[in-house]
Length: 123
Image (cartoon, rainbow, N blue to C red):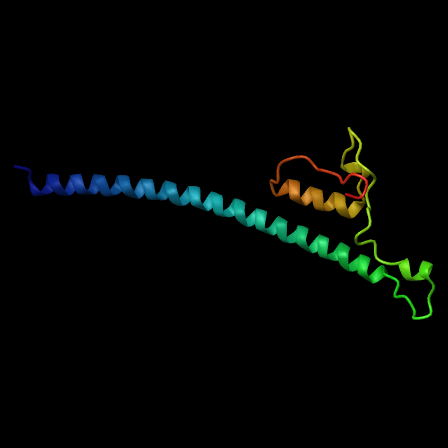
């Protein structure tokens, strides 16, 4: 028959083992949480940069007067206009404007993998 002290020692050892396992899980989850918090911050920055770019483009838009001719009425926001050159093999992000390069940098820092795909001739 097992003595009371032996049973308590067995239980204590089992509990210590479980505490160690839980501490390891907490450490792993803390690392994951920190990584996702960093990615979240980077995506928030990317969103703010894109919003700033779009706001700047909208602020630059020329509001046509009612008596404006077709040429003046068409001037305005670059939104919807191809703002990067047509893609050619071997092109890198250096062909992008500074704002777009910043967005690509933030996405890369956030761990978004893959290649930057530049639009082909307005597509």
